[in-house]
Length: 564
Image (cartoon, rainbow, N blue to C red; front, side, top):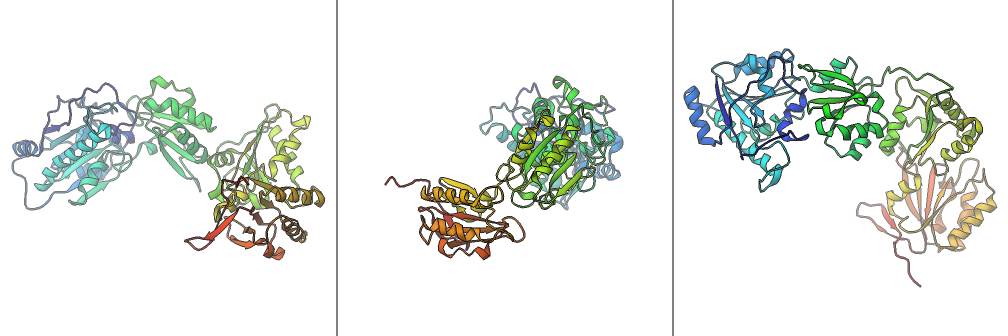
């Protein structure tokens, strides 16, 4: 067995970076040394294409040069050699050259996994990273050093391929799942016949070791690198179903904080060195941050079939009032998605409830749109008995919606100990404004034309005041089957202060299947074209329009108001 080594710059490496590309491939497995141990090699020496050719010829003689060789990316699985696929073993047997990545210490986990299948006549190419930390004197910095390394390493492999040799590049886990092999693939696969042998990833291995399903039914599995910024991690954890967080090590404290902030720490499980010697599993909340190696995974497993919370009057749950936006799932915020996913019960007007994805084991309580007070008390009572309850609203829950009803009911002594949170959503005014441009670009007022909860005289007085102040107006609840005259009356009031050609955006069902958004002059606003699913944006004296390049009229209100 002959070994060929190579390196770029000489740099002392003391630690392994938590997102070092030198360990991209290793991120697929656990950490530490697999059963059987890892071989250790001497210091690598710089080399170029000619040096590779010379050493390879010395090791194997002149290989076939009548055609290009084959490149094979070989997935080795998470660490246990017994988890290598039959095809992976065959690919190594077919190879003339076996290549693998390692840090400068020379130990390669990939090689140790495949060691029993290596032959004495295999030529070994140890692809030794020049750096495994962010510190380097390379003029291009850390990324520049790695780019040079990948270029040099792929050139070394190309020597063998040009000579007609089959080259197997070993990769822990799966070659295309955070694997270092992919850097060779991008540089060589378009030039040579190539095969990629998939392997068992550490995510699958971790789930198997935990003995819990990763995702089930309609759940989506999200894989996140722990190297993401904490805010991004928190948002994605909150909005995802099942999750696997890779690349822990020094990122673990940040990942743990993100799990806690997203409300998911209690369900998070930890797997270290999956399928290897020294394997460890447990709860993320119980793990000492100083003990976490790079080769570890945090798993948020499937919620399907998770034990339901018991109703206990001595252990209150909580009520979270959420906004679903003006339409379907595209308008949900990550925070709202997380709250909906964590809820034991979802309560709301049936139309809005239908926008919420169904989850196994979650109870749904739909009702008519005219029973807000009863709905709020029902939700608080469930929470008082220990349930986690999400009350859904369309748009933003604090804008003519359920947040007020819930808080009004929560003032009662019976619910004094029930926590209530309100999560914002995209309100209809902002959604409609975005469709036409920026009509709300300056000061504006938001009014409801519904006289169910306040007299029309109050509404008309506020319309006059806002119109006299030259504010852009967002008019909610302009009409319904039982309220057909308010739009006409509102138009009369507004024309007392606004020019007949003032632009009015008539936005119906924004984000929905029946979306229709158009702009008309105030004098031509037709009450018959307005219903309960319509929102009106009435411009100020400064609001302007022009024909957009994509067809629809653009409407905008300047941020600067004339001094005179």
